[in-house]
Length: 443
Length: 194
Image (tube, rainbow over all chains, first blue to last red; front, side):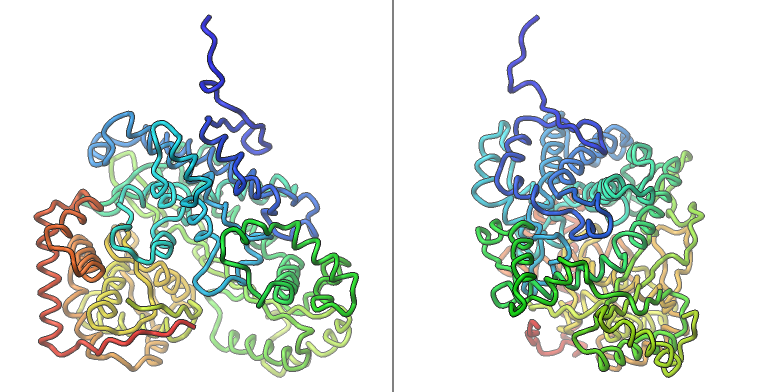
């Protein structure tokens, strides 16, 4: 039997969510690069490990998982496309299909390489107009990864990877609305595989992975079924661009994903202690970072991981006269601000209730100043733009087939968190304050 | 082009502008889809120089603002509009009583809203895709010839042949001329970044 060379054999990485993740030589080179290795030191869920000790997984393995699912989704979409739809695609040959599959996987692998320390918790400390996606785009187009793109055979175009990784909105920001850099409909479609607001594989992987590591069941759904039911559908009748929709057989799996997302937000991502830690982290970073903001220069950005921030927090927590002592100490000693008030603002609320909550927050800020956080966390759940292809060839909207309660469209969690040293006083104050603004006990 | 200020997507002014526009379009006798509403805002901004604060990119049906979609989600959650029919390809947005109330918060740009309601809103999705894409490229690349723009539109959107793209460019020029003739184009002002 002829021996296969090292270059022919795919590599495999063991993964707790997807069992095995296969990668080729190019993907392995990307994984070995410094920007990717840095993701081994960025927690996926910021300081959620303070509440769920198992939440120690990193952006690195999430990126591998998204790559794996992106390849599977691409295969399903191309395999199940009708002859009419295949005829309208700009890819004609197997070589072209292989090229774009490679681009999609690489884009998925690199989609998060620009993340800041502690992921989303730190994003507000970037200058206006900057976000982690733009860093990801810049890194994809920077020298280290471009050396890899150029040595691959066939060569991959760095801008193709960046377009699919970022999508039209962020790529336009990256390229300053350059008219030569608009995404084609095809590139937009491929970007949706990763970042589609409803069924993107980024969301699928993080729900499953977060659920697994935290030891909760909320984020579990039948992702294998859902991916197998993805379909290319016309975005409007009579031709035109395509979008990613569903076969009718995938509606229940999709509903399960929407439920999973809702439960994970309510129980994990917006857990009151997690919200408090995010605020403490942000407040500490504002004292620690030069001018209270993360650097935007790439080499400086790449030098910062959770390790540097954690070291700084530990040091500040041991020096009472240091600038960030209060918030560093709150993090290190688990002395975070405690929930004083939580309201769930739903779409059916009367206006006076929203006004009353605003007034209560203002009163709390007046009374407690820096010893209180008022935080709003919106949650959006909608799949109403998704199209479903039926067996008879018709296409309908997802909401027409789903039995999901429409009331779960949007919810905002309104937190008031107070310094634990003042919690006793605050708990005595809050009942009369609620009455003054017109909030019932049940509000 | 503009530097965009991005206030909260829950901001009253953002919801009020969209509610007011929905009100104007509703008076023409037909509620718009999100695509039609999006394009009205786009042309108010790009053609008539109304600084709405929204940023547009090229997307599936031409120009698109993800922020408008966000604001519409907020508005739907506050019952400021209803969707008229789930069975059609794109949902029609119908202003509710709550939406009428929020629309009162916006009192500017009546002439511009009236103009896009009568000129842009009645166009169908295919027309809007063609004309808005042509507009984005014409305004973003003023040095390009129409032939080059048409070829680029066909490259970006293969379902739009070059000759149809040229038609879209001509339609955009007609709109531009009509806006000038109707006196609804405001002086162009660059917005400050906050």
